[in-house]
Length: 280
Picture 1: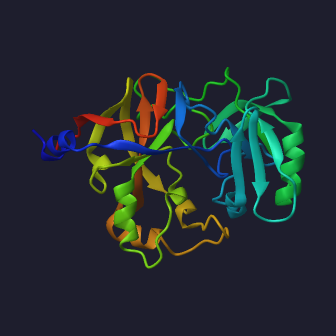
Picture 2 (picture 1 turned 45 degrees about the horizontal axis):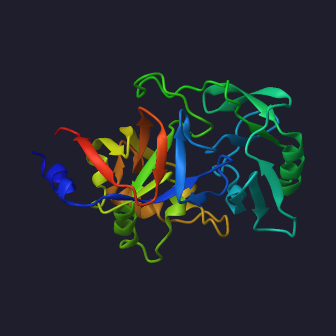
Picture 3 (picture 1 turned 120 degrees about the vertical axis):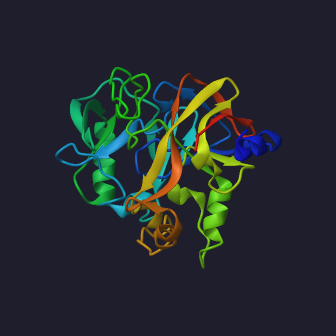
């Protein structure tokens, strides 16, 4: 029996945090529980900002997007910018009507509905013409065929329904940094607690309650973890330190992209059972 697998049986690995990011590349919301649906956690990245060419906007080219914070209430979300004195903007969970455009996310083009009221508000905030768009249920954006198992679909996330990171992996990183950072820099959906640092690298399949989850691939990181979420300034860390021990093939890896076989409710405190490990 694999030693890490054997040890994981004896330990109590649990879900510590659950996050959704209703608008791609804007602030996240921590939840005590979330419903896992076909394309990911409910409400996660179903909204997105696009430019005049209908191509997605992200912190990679517009770091100030990190300064927008979101909160969830009964009928939708409230959005506020850390800069200026603008009142909160209220956003519904979903819309059914509006102009349909072809939005581009990386190499994918997919139908999306523009929310004109949101387009006006965000254009004023970022001082650049943009559109706020929503992914309706009938839009099918597929996971990369190289890693998909059963033609899984995804929202406006970079490529996969969910991202998982172990708290111990961040703890290991923070021991190497002069100024520790928070998990929000890495924008995970699920944060586990109770494993060894970077043990999630060796997981192949896990189960949370009745939800069966496959680890698709390790997550290659871009500049976003080095953007300070309070100032929008690009800093040297944590990528400088990560490059010294988490680099391969000229890419920094931190976290695991997930695919799920079925949906269900996931709550903080739920046990994470490792049902299959990678073979070495």
